Image (cartoon, rainbow, N blue to C red; front, side, top):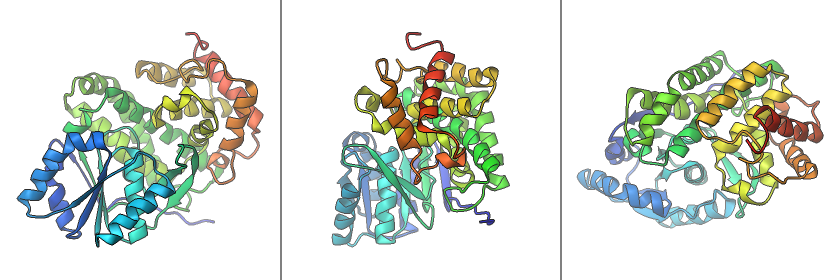
Length: 366
């Protein structure tokens, strides 16, 4: 394979109060929208959404999202959409809600508008969904021919979410350049079935630069619900730059190890996507034989963000080596992205690297 592919959403909108333009964006794509959201997010956003649709004299159907991006939930909501002759799908919420909205859109061959209410992942812009079982275990990806028609990020809503989610988005975004470089070196395949483009590398580099430059000041403002230029920069880095970077540049071991962690049971599942990706990024850097000073830069930044950098933070203080091998085995699943780093590492190598990150970070009790 020698082709290069670059994909992106048709339209990306970001700013304070942009949720009020939602109905206007829907009106450009169809006239019978289905909005999905979980109950908490809906309680925080429905007033502005209702005002938007009333002022545009458009009606919509709302259906509550049950919380898991599973094939069963996708089928349930797709059937509701078909029964109501829906011609636009709108997802409002976090990564799993948005991934489900994209899947419904694909089932119906209809436009989709993505409204992220956190900046916690780079899922909003992509032409894929991460699929889990009803119990929350990673089962695979669903890929789509096109990216969302519109991504609408309301900065004021995003900073109302817990700052931990804002921080997790930075952790997720910091994996982007690490994984794009690995995919480039390996001449691996990206999420859009091509080789990494120069554009994807440049975007990934800008994402990392932005996070290290503005991340700390943005964190303090977001923690108080304040939107500043630094906050806007980080929202864009977490959402748009990281999204375009990972999809067109490739994922490697960091996200595969995140998926590998779903093989374990217990309190690790209380951690969010970006938290587990942070640890996976450090594991990939160990496997790449990166110098301590380079790894420590990431560890120190993750610690500032209160992201997990040791086994205690990961709720794995008593994990056995055998269980870590299971993480490695799942991470190396041929259908996942670990091979964009290398085919040479064993599941035991992954387990050893997980332990090494713990020690580089100061041990599980630090």
